[in-house]
Image 1 (spheres, rainbow, N blue to C red):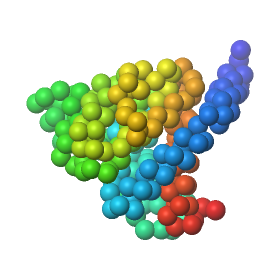
Image 2: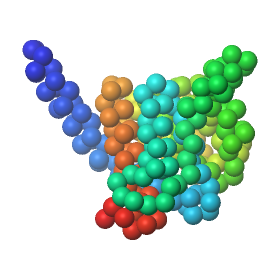
Image 3: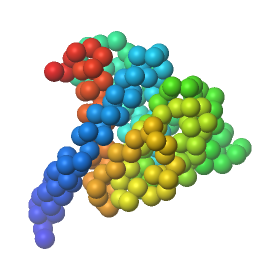
Image 4: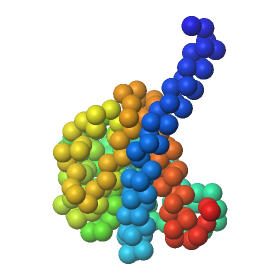
Length: 197
């Protein structure tokens, strides 16, 4: 396989993963957007977290909420728990890296808020602890996972939603996670403002 063929294979694999995801995720994505919309209508906020590429996704979602997605509309309350370097490093240094999100949620989370928890493996300990902290605050969790879901499904409550990408390849999972985030942002704008139609 030459370089061009390798690139073509990446495109093909990404397309196939999106097709498989489109067979079972749209209803769950809609349900997740409904939970976020309900929280926003109740004057609540969305907290998001993840590691590595998933940290970037959590910040991407927050920026789309705070600024705008595709059309002009009021800013919406969202906080990416991955952006405060002094807080993250002090928690990691004084306690544990596994606590970097949970401690922020205990301080910032309120009943009725939503946690968008992103992990391709479902096994990131700091994200699992974030879910536990969110439940302690009576928050709803929207989980973006992949592979077999890892440890995360066992941590979720009946009111939570898992959006699991049917792939074992991290890059493919992340590509679909971004699409899911864009779908949720579009549905939020559509349901709250009648935009994006």
